[in-house]
Length: 113
Length: 112
Image (cartoon, rainbow over the protein chains, first blue to last red):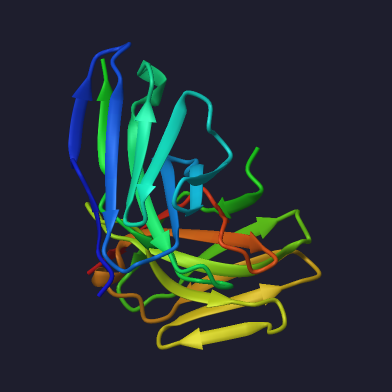
């Protein structure tokens, strides 16, 4: 079974803090993704990585950065957290082929005060 | 602006009834359409998917219907059960690629 784990289920931070969200997958997947989930807006892609040290911007990259130093780990960084970044953050991974299934972690609910 | 529009946002169905969730898209380059199911406290998981060269795909009680000319696709859940209560997301990708565009989600509640 594919397992995608996220470092925290719940996180409370203050405006202006630097926030790190960590994601680890154990299936040697090439692709990793960060989404945010908001009611009525579905899942929106923040960043995508198709290999170590490689990244592509998704639909809403502003205010976020990512790091992928090892194949199994993909980090999302909020350089200076703002209240409008309060959301559920989901990490996913997949193989690199066509129409590959994305496997999601349980999510991190971030509250920025 | 969402490229994949999903409706309804919420749905209540009686046990044994049919649940129908609809999605519409504008980008004709989309060529792969998966549905993901998310239970509370869990991440989404792939439920069923369709390619545009077929008009229908069925897996157990779940069926995707696809209308290429109308640029619409829908999920039908037959004999809906309380265990089907979850949030459902349609999605689409271009050139069978790995980047998915998701709809806004439908929260389904099946009443016993």
